[in-house]
Length: 295
Ligand code: ADP
Ligand code: ZN
Image (cartoon, rainbow, N blue to C red; front, side, top):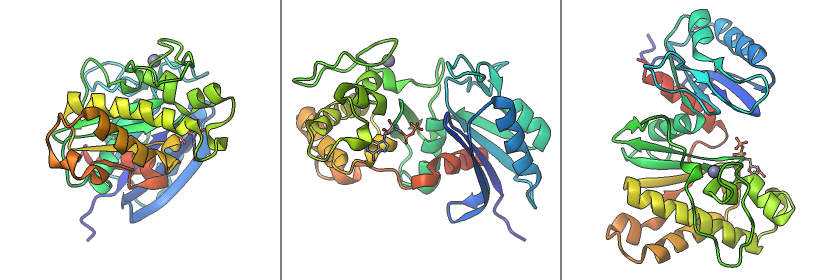
């Protein structure tokens, strides 16, 4: 008898969906990926995937692009709410999956799910309070506090903290609500708008990366002093630029000015601010890790 439960995961991304079953990163039994078009089609494909597996998962986790309603006590729990994305406004993801597959479903934002995945299987296995920040098309943050995903009034919106300008940066910012918030200054599209080329095309050594490191370091400092995380994980497409992480560590140390007197930061910053460990499958593995919370 196999004692480990089989988890199902749905990474419901704005660009692509990934569905998988398995018991962990080394044992993904089946997986499908498809581009995100309409919600009816995406739900049908996901449900069909689980229903045609040789063994149904014991529970399914869904990590979704937002904004979402992730309050289990709410009547619209499991919904994608007021997204600008065509055809996805007020879409119930949990209800149809639970009814069609007949197993418990746990739901949260994609970034909260990814953080739970890193906690179970990745770069935060040995800590219980940590920050996971993803820097991609948007910027999102998840706080795991004493092992639990932090929710309050709603899920955190850490990408929208206000940040002081980098010296010499006169970019007006790209957030439609705040202009110059972290996401408005440092998301992939913000970088592209500032430098008039895709972030992926900006060469190593370009001043863009020093400015980028400034904004992310400021954000990390603000989250260190507010959340007191035992580790900070920085992921997302933009963080694939390998020069960013060392620059961010240096600026964080410099601008904290020795105020937080903990060896984890002052002596071991390389293992304090780190890259995620789950790579390409982080999203769907995070969703599978969420499923574990139902069992
Ligand atoms: P999403 O946030 O859409 O889920 P990603 O985390 O991959 O997806 O982020 C996509 C963004 O990251 C894009 O703006 C892209 O330009 C940027 N990006 C992806 N790879 C790189 C890279 N190697 N260097 C710089 N920017 C990158
Ligand atoms: Zn904003």
